[in-house]
Length: 223
Image 1 (spheres, rainbow, N blue to C red):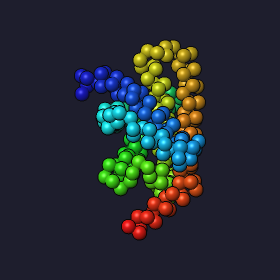
Image 2: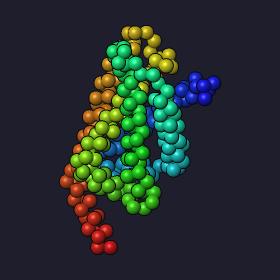
Image 3: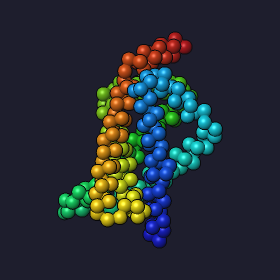
Image 4: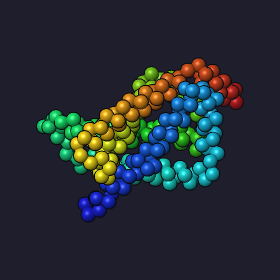
């Protein structure tokens, strides 16, 4: 792998932005529909996305395969990295370490989240129309809610800090001034992205989703 490490890292970096970065933002906006439009707004947007042409092909080649490569290779990079934050307390050195830590946390979180949602849809335990209720059932557990908050904050940091690194690695932000300005921009976006994700999680714990979840549970118990 050493001989191909340059191209492997470039591909890893690129996939983190296109398509995975776009998917993260799209997923956040989909979930945020639960804040703006409640259960109906969330379900309408989920129905729209699942009605797109060749949606399964888009998921496989636009999400799952890039995510698999980015996640697995990212674990390899994290394992190979020599973190020296204890010896050199520079800001970027700390960001380097946090990027690896949040990468591992995000990968584990995504696997869990996919298992609880998309996989349950695939095996028929949940429908697209009841994903909001599924999220309510998960997040009604305070421990799971805390873990989800940690997961979305880790994912938001990994993306925004990764964007800073991407712009440097691809020669877009050249020089200390541009890189310093980029740091401010992406840290602000990290706060915004995290806040929107957390607000969305809290929306799923609301009474709108709770009432429907109770009705679904009652129907299932009768059946």
